[in-house]
Image 1 (tube, rainbow, N blue to C red):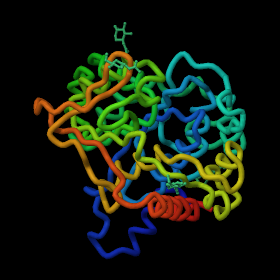
Image 2: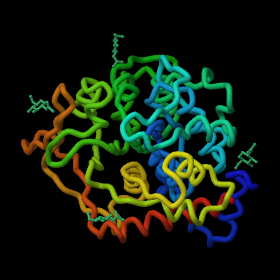
Image 3: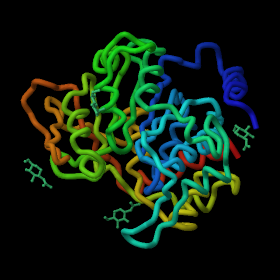
Length: 333
Ligand SMILES: *[C@@H]1O[C@H](CO)[C@@H](O)[C@H](O)[C@H]1NC(C)=O
Ligand SMILES: *[C@@H]1O[C@H](CO)[C@@H](O)[C@H](O)[C@H]1NC(C)=O
Ligand SMILES: *[C@@H]1O[C@H](CO)[C@@H](O)[C@H](O)[C@H]1NC(C)=O
Ligand SMILES: *[C@@H]1O[C@H](CO)[C@@H](O)[C@H](O)[C@H]1NC(C)=O
């Protein structure tokens, strides 16, 4: 299998001079709650395989060693074998058990073990970065206003970043570092224009409120409704060696669809509105209550926020996602 670098050079060599537009490449830090829902795996798949994207770092906001090992295995398979991975502390070796529907299986330990690869191989979860240190190091190394942060779960890592002070990576406070380096925060969470959604209230809602109410750059929200059913085709048609198709099969079974909140957020983070989404709520901003419920406020004090709505049918959107998933996995068969 080609390394990413060899592959990039090989692809670059086939294109006319100037066709590789570095300015169009979105530099991503992903904060994932990979553990219970399997859509984090297709989100990582898109981030690792879509053109015009580069993963700088991944932070995990669920407190299981297997979550971090699964991230390493998945992005390692798609060539990101050196990318640093952070894991919230303290963590345990607890594995997911479906005590909601008693149907879904556990997949993070399985994918972490059977595809052990990347910067955090099996048995090394304690070597994962502290997420706040990883945010600060990664942001400090990047050009101003160049990093897109994608939040796919709970908010304690981002709250820790906003709460941080100058250190060996940067003299800037957390908010100043974010303001200097971040282009946009993309958040999977919330209901629009108002409601209560699990990523906002299910973890530590005060951290959600801190991040959403005080984050100093533009934010785009991909809420509860930006969701269709997909993944069955991936399990049917992916190469047998693929770790994301294997995760779907372990968790929900062969030829079964699942929710797609997280891949949509990543797709927006990389390609923008494109033909899929329409932006709503301009001229207003999100407000999160201490209990994690949220509501959109039109007071014009903060007008760099928007929420997404799908502008194509759910069937068309599902077909689009499935074809992007398959295109991605086939590159790394
Ligand atoms: C890890 O991933 C790299 C990049 O895809 C691949 O070349 C290598 O064979 C993989 N190693 C293992 C043990 O799967
Ligand atoms: C913020 O920093 C204070 C002081 O260091 C600490 O007690 C608190 O737990 C931190 N909060 C978060 C969300 O990191
Ligand atoms: C599309 O929405 C309909 C109506 O809610 C639902 O029955 C169907 O399963 C959805 N299909 C997909 C691919 O999400
Ligand atoms: C959360 O708090 C807000 C504001 O006080 C309130 O309107 C809402 O009903 C609460 N939501 C829940 C689910 O308790």
